[in-house]
Image (cartoon, rainbow, N blue to C red; front, side):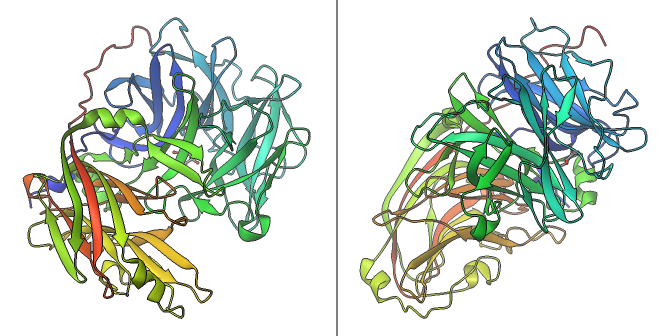
Length: 541
Ligand code: DQQ
């Protein structure tokens, strides 16, 4: 069969071939954004020889692939150079901490640093001769100790890191202080713990400003700052975060809403998005989030196509001052440089139960902004007793209610055999409050049999007087959707076989029974951001 759905993406980061997973050690150094990543140099599946792939970019768009930064060449990482984070010291030096899986598959923490700090590309890395710097402490399983964070400064001028683990079924994050990144002291207690959540992978910990518009350096401490804890739950492969208060004296963090969510209540993304990591970008004073988008087809298909996984477009993240209880995530502004050929559709009326094609040419590489207006009278007359719809528990875009679903059909073919609806659904709870859901339905995204066809999504906060808005990045087989300015996000990994290239189309749809919807849409074609050729090869090994 023709396997055009396996076309590579045009502006998402991916290596030239083979398997990739977690983003590692993102940083900005001497004018370059560095991305390291979990990489299997030998094939398109995860394996026990995971190394650190490495690439650099000036703009997050055009990437220069560099030689593998760290191989599995020491007893303490021979079964895998696993996930880690970078810390930039005040003097500009870069410290890398990562997890190694030893010759006996024990998870230990290792230190590495650039061989030549004058090289802006940081091609060569040195592993500290006395590695490992940390073994699993007493009471911690030898396979439950991984993914050190970026270090932040304590008031005493020490460096502090946290590392995910578990006690029985309680997910925990251990805290260590260090002065030199070689010797560490385990602190009493944990940064945070949540019963029943299992192993915490890729913990992230960082401050956000509650009133400013800039991102904050990881060590920033002041009034008007909340701290975010993010954990990747191995058990359900999703990334969760919460806001709370960090107490430096006891090295603990208390969630703002412990009753509601035990402190890990919100998801970065309700689609495919895992093992994410932020870093502070001093160049543009922003905090940038990287997240791994895994494949949702079969391993067989990955082996056939010779590659697996991409990274989500990096997102700037900020505290949402308007709602006061979620982050807002937005594609880094550089992405807009790829826009060309804008088309505007003003106040298009979509009758109840209809679809409206949007003539944009090929709809395989797009940046879409859409705004929906619903008749206020229909909203007022909505029945309060209405069953509250829920994305994953519904029949998706085919499940008709008075005020939903309506939205866009992404990567649709002419006959609408394949399409991925991204949509809103409004209902009214028993108390009369409006409840807006934002969902993506993959049940008809592909005629292929071996792919995930789930329906994902969640509620999205909509404040009084706000229109419903969505931004959607479409890149052949990746769809990243951001509702209400990035309050709720859904990343879709889809495998169209018909809705590809020139045959990929874009539609508006309204499957509500009770009202017409008015939509205003701005669509940009996206140019391809080709990866540059290797700019440099290793001189020493
Ligand atoms: N992936 C790494 C681990 C991490 C996991 C291994 C998360 O360090 O816990 O490839 O996807």
